[in-house]
Length: 114
Picture 1 (tube, helix red, strand yellow):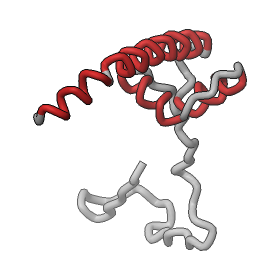
Picture 2: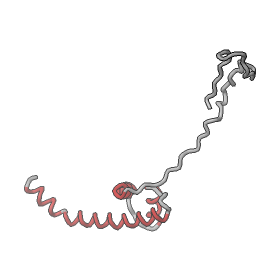
Picture 3: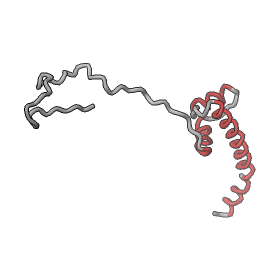
Picture 4: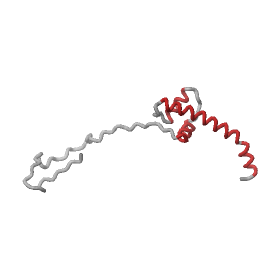
């Protein structure tokens, strides 16, 4: 570190302290909002709530503070039914005509994916 860099860094200490204090205040507000949402709100909703309350803050800053505090929202999974056949799918042919009785083992072999 050169001599001029050291003095520039030293002069910026007050700004770093002010930013840390502002981040601590923001972290408290985020924690309160997250707990009020029963720990379900993520970055977009927390940011929207802060804006609604009149707090002007960048979404990326909210994301960074939440990441530092290990606060995460709950993501709903999309419901997806796996048992619906395709619209153009043809039914499988019934080769044994629903007669599952065999005279001896190994004559009729059937399978089911369920």
